Length: 519
Picture 1: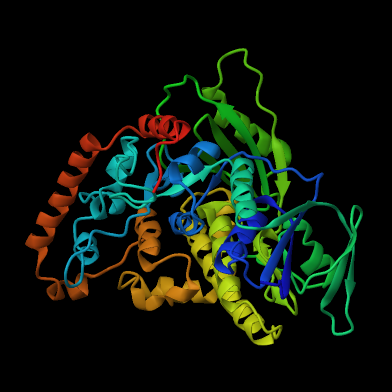
Picture 2: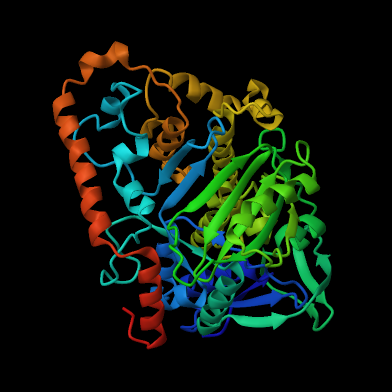
């Protein structure tokens, strides 16, 4: 079939190659469909693979692309992620820790278990996540979320991945080329606009003019098309989310058999937090901070102190990479025949690993809304509305982590200032004083996080919901206690039945190398 419409993606990385592979698969490029896709990648811009966290949605995306799970994990140095362990976020103490699992609370009939947990003695009840699901027990024991034979992307527990971002881009690029995407290496030197303000063509150093019907800007923070050429501004949320810098590095494991975490570890410090992501061969570590509350030198001291226990004496400290970012997003990421995906469309901060899931959401919407007839106004308006609402809601969720802290450093005190808390979140927090977060608080198509994600953060950080006035409405306390006991028993069994995380990663890598895994 003759190609009738063309798409030009500017920029590689996770955003560009995921967009290319997904659109090629969805639009049937390899099968000779009417769409042709080219990806133009700048030859002088590299990707630093210090580790990237993902959402469980990534499994469905990789399955759709036709990738083999074990092979993808081997190619990207990936490990399993079952949630996030937060340390020192509440009061900064040594024992200050809570878990945000990927599993929803254990399903029950009626009102569920949350009210019965809230009505227990606050000094004697177990932590919220530990009571609601046995995933914390599995993660604390450094167990994998699956045994291995379940099949690609399937498991008894919900999970995502940690992977090396540079290697992930390479794996997605290979798949995109298999699906019919044309790959060019070149540098954009100019963007020519048509009379109506749409993009007419790009000018490149290597190929001269390159034209397409539709352009996808995946050029990262540079925002070559949406920002520099089309002049679409970014809405700052700096007044809500204060962090704007990150230092990152890779740290080798002490030994080849060092136990491997199956969650991200987020440890709060005086002006932000550090992340630790366990890749197959090294730890990806970073320090996120607010430059208004901490200098670059102080942040480096925080990160050096964090990695020091993992380095043998005499070992040279790893080099650090500094990234500056402005928390914000474009309210109109789709303008005429150009849409921005990934960092070009917006970035908030690394907390809760929202970067990749926002790429997934944007690419999925673009695929379904793609203007085959060339009329982009209506799909652009819908795309912009949905992406803006999603960014707004993620801002609220991220702010929740900061405004509930009781830490006394200026950064944390400033985060508790009501003037920095969005009105919608302030209203919900007021309601949640007398009832837990509910599914009716959120429209699912506009959310990256469900109501139970809010519950995990609220009650992990010690938020108090007073249900005493409604105690009579929850008469099944004895049955609830039996269910809590069953969850603990399931956790005990799972920690014995599931393999050690590192052992499963090693086994999957070996099997993948032999070419024996696949569906």
